[in-house]
Image (cartoon, rainbow, N blue to C red; front, side):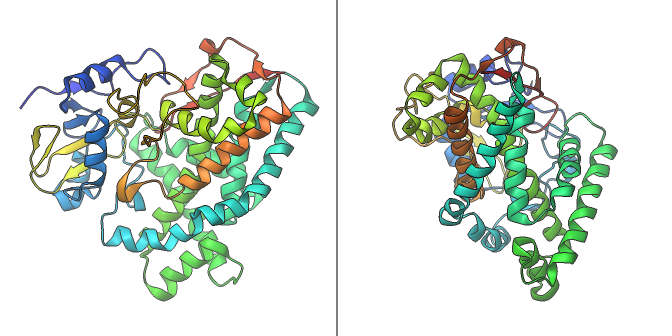
Length: 398
């Protein structure tokens, strides 16, 4: 068994994959790595190998099925924030639970929400104009837009939204103690339990009420599953977009891509897909897969019980899948990126995130066409102590 290298590998910039990832991908085979917590794992960096692992039923997300105790799971934080959520379920339970929420995030339902979302984005941009420069892209757009959208979908009262974001921000830390992370999870769960109880008997209780009734009446969800599902929807539903927006604008303003969108808003859908490919969201080492039986990945035998890390940022820059992979190209071909994963765990909210990101770019391009950085882009500070990368602030002017 080869020695395990410390992982994540060091990188020159939070939005640039570590050079060691490209070296590992060039070698063409998975390599052994050791994360801050848990046992060693195999690191997969090639596009085709990543797709194989993410869709191969020989790999699961439920560590228990592979006989791996929770404390031995390879992870970057003191606890696995996806634990006991839909993100670490395997079929048939995953299929059943995903079916309960998948209908809420269909492309058709999401498109019906687009005009309302655009109204929110236009209001936020107008507030930036009214306040005058400089503004903060994180404070003024990236955070409030997705929080309002997911809370509208799930029925979180406006008065509670600030507290909710603070809890989830602390919960997603990878450096806090286990006790502190669990304390913040308990706060979120207490809030969600109360909300589910209030919405359960309300005919207009929306998704939360419907899921609560599944637990209370249909027994199709355990209490733990209900809380895990609501927690995942609320946190992932706003963290994804809130963290990607600053990364998108970093690349757009650094490479003059924003001026192209101002001149031709029709480029926005393609730009979003290309930016999703290039801007890493989840910190390396998240969402481990577990080998349920002996199998082979990239020519390497992976025994049952071994753990595998799929590094999406490396796979999305694989030159065997994308020509000139480090270049921002709005007109790139149709090779699908893996930003939202692949296979049965492909992000259930991908349609919602795409719509929000498109709306954010359109609203900014039309409302603030002169947008430019108010401080050197290389001076931006990125929070790398959370499971999702995010800018602490993004000063802009216009």
